[in-house]
Amino acid sequence: MAKQSQQAAETEAQAPLSLTDLRPAKGSVKAKLRVGRGRASGAGKTSNRGHNGEGQRSGRSRKRGFEGGQMPGYRRMPKINGFQVINRRNWLELNIGDLEQILLPEENELTYELLLTGGLMKLKHDGVRLLGKGELKRKISVEAHYVTPSAREKIEAAGGTITLVGAEA
Image (tube, rainbow, N blue to C red):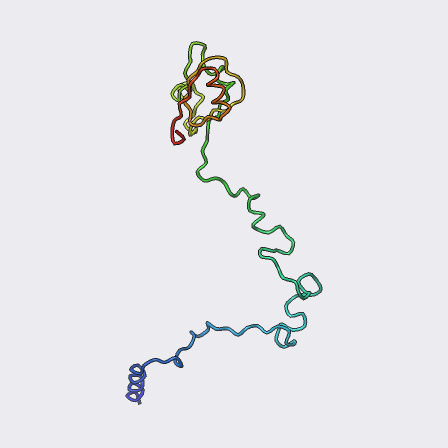
């Protein structure tokens, strides 16, 4: 008996496959749920739509992301301390008006090293950004990573020069 089944298995293994031999894997194909086909089906009467309401009526299509009127997840996310900038740059922002207070009367050059030794610039800062608020009364040469157009105009009007440092240069 065992010999016969072994021989049958060998002949089956040698036979070429045809389209009629192909079958989906067991459990991979599931019958479609047929709603509204009576109480015995488990999806009768209201056809899994619930009783009286927006989704129960015909012709109603649900938008993607709709959560029954609740604020959808994609709109809630920004409010939940999310979406923080990963590689955030931390700049030391100085106004033109601040330069008069930072520099001593005999100093006429604002450098990166001067800010570090003076204690204004910390190691957590990535660089210096010069903004245009205030007035400048004397000639100053400035080293900065970024200078706004209004700040550039005021420095050059006072006879000063600007040197850009870093990637922006």
